[in-house]
Image 1 (spheres, one colour):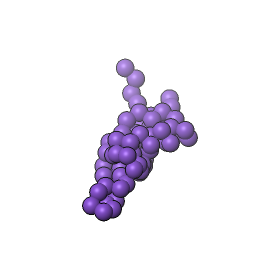
Image 2: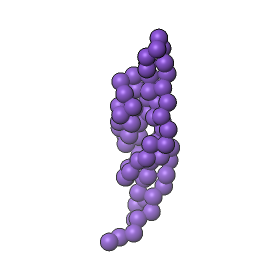
Image 3: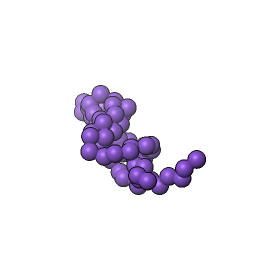
Image 4: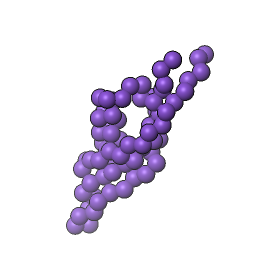
Length: 69
């Protein structure tokens, strides 16, 4: 098994649909310009409330990028 090294970055995705969709948005957008996305960890979730309902989700992620050998 080969040892790996990872760089961690922080991303925040947003969505009007759900927290899961906010995660998807962040990872899909990041994958367009970053290589070797390998894992993520949710480190924060927040939302905007309008008229007593959730209007917008924001999810902050810690993302690990595997460094090329």
